[in-house]
Image 1 (cartoon, rainbow, N blue to C red):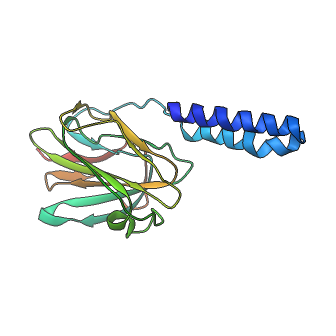
Image 2: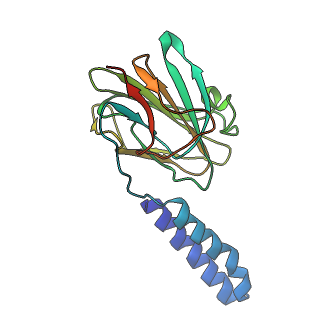
Length: 200
C-alpha cells in the first residue's frame, strides 16, 4: 500500500463519518466509498521479477501503441485506467542517468497526443549495454506525478521508481538491440510482464 492512499482514505473516512453523524448516515456513504476506492487504487502488490536479459513493463495497463522512434528504436505506450495499479517500476536494472520533468497539458492519456503534449517525467536508465527511456505521463484525471529516483541512483530490474495518481500513460523507448515480445492490445503488469528480450 502506498502511504498516500492511507492518508486519503483516513481523511475521506473521517469526513464521511462526521457528515453521517451530523446530518444523516446516508450522507456519509459517498465519502466512505471514496475512502475504500483510495485504498484499492493505491495498492502496491509484490511482483515476481523475471531473470535474464529482459526489459519488463514499467506499468500495469494496456499496450495502446507500438511505433518506430528515431535511430531504429521502438516506443511502447501503455495506458493505465483508474482500476490499474499505478506504482511504476524500472524496465531494466542499471544507473539512472537522467530525470527530467516537463509541464504540459492533461489530455486523455490513451490518445497519441498525450505522449508529446501532456505533463510528464522522463527517466533514463543505462546498464552499460542498453539505454532505456521511460516516461510517466499524466492523463485527464491525473494531476500528480511522483518520482522516487534521482540521477545517479542504482536500480534493479523491476524496482519501484514512482507512481502517477489516477488515470495515466507510460511510454517506454527501447533500442534496436531489443526484440519485442508484446503486441498492441495486450495487457501487461509492472515488473513481471516481459516487454522485450535483448538480442545476444
